[in-house]
Length: 120
Image (tube, rainbow, N blue to C red; front, side, top):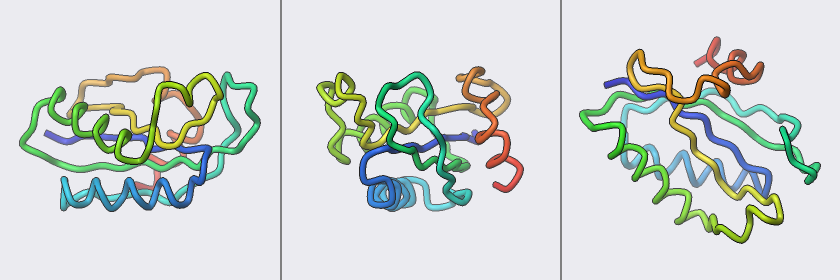
């Protein structure tokens, strides 16, 4: 199955995305990453810029197995529920698509996602 992810961070984003790339590469060796882009926050009062990136890989895994791995990586990066209240996003890894099944249709419509997909 082919999986498409979107990574994002507004707290030490260079460090957090580097950590995510390392962990994801260990889990999914054939993963490929787009360049990082800076984006404005969507729906947050915290005005810290985000760094976002797209990743694509193939794995013999279920959607739920991949989701669990992504949540584990987020926790390893220090993501905590209390951060959400302060609008600090240490690391967010969203599973956008699995094969032809779009799992996050609103995210797929974001301009930066479309732009990154064109180069991934």
